[in-house]
Length: 188
Image (tube, rainbow, N blue to C red; front, side):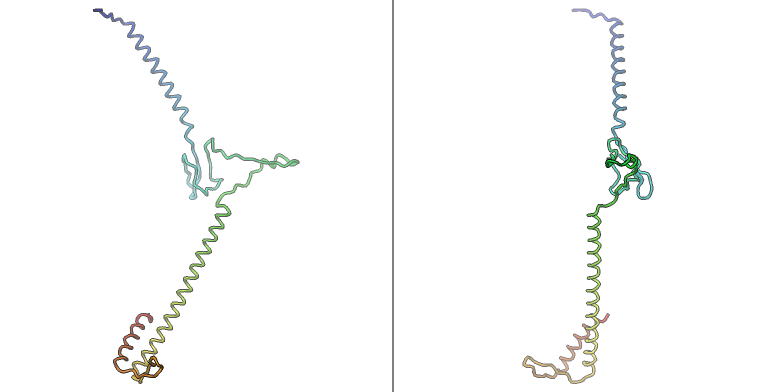
């Protein structure tokens, strides 16, 4: 069996190797952290109420271009300016109008939907007016019919052959009951 000799020298080597690796891993970790910082895209804009908003997502659709204060570097808006031959380059540096808001087809669709809503509301008002007029007519007729039934005047009806038949008291009472129900439903 062999005896192992222990000395202080290998301990120092192990310790110095450990320190060297620890320093390397620390530097590598700091390098990774420094590189990861700019990876996160930052947007900055002013919302409809005027408050500043910060996000890693772009602002919502319809946000005016003038309200977008900061974009990520990879999202910078490119300006392409075409200068016709013979014009000065100062015309190219003039600010371009920025289109914002809904497109023409969206505006047309919204206008069409608004007009359809107005038409539907108009048709509904017309139908309600017709129904109200029919109710008034039914109410007036029922009230006139009730007056005739209550006067006690002899009333007649035509049978299937067109011959007049005098209404007896039972038929008069049934007709009065039917007329009262019409008055209750139509004369409000």
